[in-house]
Image (tube, rainbow, N blue to C red):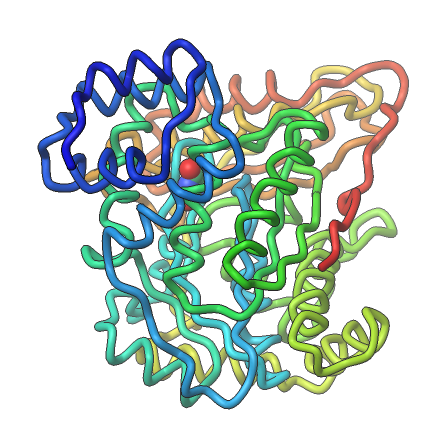
Length: 440
Ligand code: URA
């Protein structure tokens, strides 16, 4: 059966619905190049304005999944869980959660992405470790997961190719931030991993795709419902991205922070451990993953099990094994930037807000992210946050320090970062990092 593209676009533009067959045809014709890019862009914009029903989102997810092939992990002896975050700045928890789950003997086959827009990507972070390989063959990935519980690779040409092509088009047509399109894009890739359960870190705030808590709740419910319809157990944790997560944002520096946490180290400044947000969020997400396997009776037992892997060094050993089987990679040779500069407060007061997306864009200027999809990144570029929301500052105090091998953008970046950190007379009502959990 074939359809008339303009008729389908027109129907969606006017708020109409599509049948699963129509959606299946749009995706397969687009993947084959018959439904042209300009038609797909118009259809995506129509979806942006008109939305989709739950049934349409499910049909879109399945059509994207079926555009490629799926892993088959059914031969593994226990549950397979992945963690997916909707993205942010300094969001590095995968590098800790993978080893934590491997140490708990929970399988975690993880297909990750590169930095997108102002948000960082797990593949770029891992590749900042000299020798780390993310371009695994399918067989290597399957064998690492089976032997070591945890492996990470990028999306290949045969995993959801429709999503790969569609995402690139959405990126340049201002249609990324559409709830139905985000849901289908994320969940098709997760379903391709052949999981039994999924933990979602759905972020809201100034550095997230979803700017408000209500939008994040809607996205979390929709993602959860699609996963559950396909037989997955899903927990969604809604978390704040109103400031960069933890001490560092960048690539090599985020790996450094995770390695420090896995080694049980702290970084206490002014009575507060700057590693605490990253450690706490990683433990919480990993504990929900363990709970979803059914191995433990409640979230308290799951947390205890996860914390014990950190305390005993078992998670560190799992990370060190990962560096060997996806390497050999040498963490002692993480690249360090040649140039750095501090940003100092121009007045006294309290950190009232942080424009986290603007911080992420400043990181791109430093070379930590890409302006075009084929650009090279500087793995050593990044920022170290000295202060967080609500902290008191005196004029002249350092707020953060940024670094890169290329200082040509330093004066622009200093202004961007200073403008992004708003200092006011009174402390803000700061939201907590972990706001709510939509449990299985
Ligand atoms: N991440 C994805 O994989 N897809 C989206 O659409 C948005 C975030």
